[in-house]
Length: 354
Image (cartoon, rainbow, N blue to C red; front, side, top):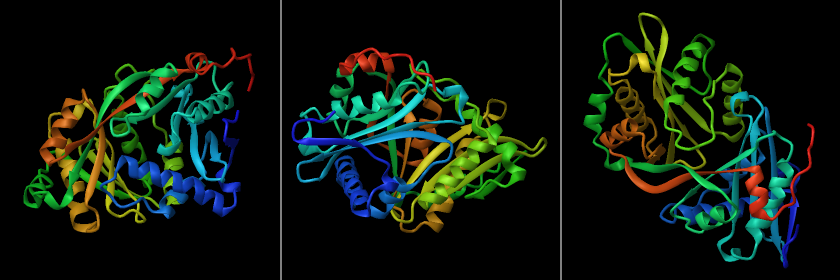
């Protein structure tokens, strides 16, 4: 479905000429600058690496919108894991429309194409995506197509040059009795896979708000899928795993990612301590140990960012203790496919078997 003055088509970025791949990447640059005007422009190589990557065991669909001059001014992409049966109904999506081309029906047209492409992927599809208060155009659009807020969140960030290094070094040496930390980079060795799985599944205790999301069960196959994706895009992944020495059980973990092509920013990923091992300051210990290493080994990094549910008081408390401050408010939005079709003015879907 095209919009007057624009053309929309389905694309597989890796099959496009390099110039057309770069045109999509330049739109992502514009969107990144809208979110983070205070930072350097996101480097094209970092964007292109993600655009060209082919995550293992995933289904996805992507559409672009071009103006009369051929400029890419809109894009939607998303998909689902084929290795996560607990949440096989979830399809994650990211919609981008250039600020100069909004309120012309492009977002609606792109989303219509995407919803149609997803039909039949699951009997009860729920679309999920993130919006934030730095791009206020997102919320009225989402409400207009029938989406509802599922989980209010904060994106917190730590100004690394301002960190009290002495205090961080002290917390990194908390050394609770009966536990040890293992440092893992890039690939989880076989001997630690079981411990990591046990610790990582502690993320199910994180608040889910009203999200139509089930508990998930991380598997060794999913670990290897993610390791493969990191390798494709050139992202470095650091993991700290807390081990209960008496049993060898994984008691907790924390992890960060860093892209050498965008060296100033580090993203804090998951952190969890499983219930039997709480109350020993393992969360503070692990995160301080990770931060201590970052300060020593990532001199070009100036900021660490992380997302936390507004109701996750324990993790927010640790982050505040470490010096994190709120950068912006985010919300995970969701919409079942039937509501999306209604909100987008699409005809009722016919049954499709796949």
